[in-house]
Length: 437
Image (cartoon, rainbow, N blue to C red; front, side, top):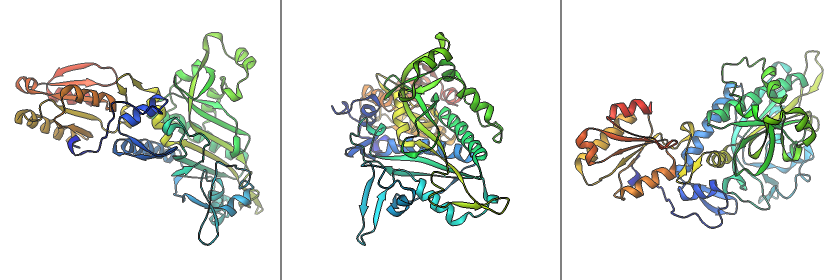
């Protein structure tokens, strides 16, 4: 992609109302534009990252056995009346009446709708276990939307819903999502710590938040340092026997500020391992049994032929929120530092003299070679001064910067910079490509 033809409206200064680093950098890097309080247009660079994060989430859901669907953003109020949540949910729900006087709502979550889909088609325990997920825009009318995409009103979310014959099976489904989340966030370069959490308006008696530690996190968290240092389980696990992995992590202390017990923390955790930090919630999982299946009559015929209410769980990941969380955890004074797996491009090729035919030819050859090797490339072919090009490349955080100028062309070399470390090397193009990988 040529930068001269791309839409990248960068800013030298962030607007004064952008309070946290991720919001400031997303605006400055031309990733988003605010359209209303807590509502953003996603510009090309931001959308590329959003799509990459979404794909990682999708792949890990499918690896764990979930099946993708797509539910609409608008839902019938009557479904929520069945569950008893329509009046209880509060002013965060955006309620709508259409031209036929039907009451609708812009979905803040999808427990009712997925339960209705399930009860319409699944009649026997033989179809279980079942986990359905979708990735869809949601709306919650926050009283004080702030922090950019971290606490917006409209947001992209992955939510999955499990259906099982009994509590034991439902808890196995819960464990699959628990492990899938650890793997999902690790692939994005994040250390996410599972913490026992309040179930809130979703309901139920078992819930964990997945918290990314960041100095600018929205809330205080308390945990055993060992949890931060544990590697992700990885894809090669026995998906039918995950209890030991879950037990290993839940046996160590980890709690959000709302659930924190100072006495338990001190007694359960060695003093050297007591970690108090700021954290950002990026995922939340719940087991709530028959909270929705009972009032909505979502039943299947069991092995004995008797109808039984299914046990359910729900599992959310804030896909759009993850962009903010990643930036909060990975940036420096110059800008964003994207982990390779979610970066909008793999490499930015910087042409130091766009009016020099030999430099342009060398840049074109480098771009062609990188793309042939399967790399996504942003080619800065603009006539901006070198200092401005380097500042833009650092700001938007692409993992590798490959710079070509007249001197390098004469000597047959390029300059390669690793954004995360700042390390620079001068070497032939083929060696640079080997290092990029």
